[in-house]
Image (cartoon, rainbow, N blue to C red):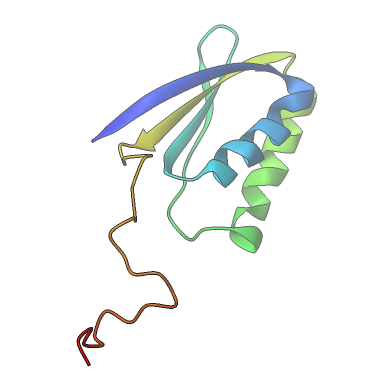
Amino acid sequence: MSFKESFNVNGENLLKKIKEIIAEGNVRKIIISDKTGKEILSFPVTIGVVGVVLLPVFAAIGALAALLTECTITVERSDTPKDEDHNDTASPTENPNTPTDI
């Protein structure tokens, strides 16, 4: 399951916002549209894709930012729970395999 979010940004903040969105995680796809709603750029973001792989995409976004005054970023996110509790795991000092009545 996934859901979509949209952000309106101006051209100078486009690349910065894209990097923030990717850093947040659970992103499947990013779509950049102009102010009339016409899709300009769309690219998938897969888990583990960082750094050198995204450099050509960032270069294209930087070029778009110079041309666009206003645009919309639509982000498709995977529907993962944000409140994943890991309280049922043992603390680092506890070994769950050690018998307690020695």
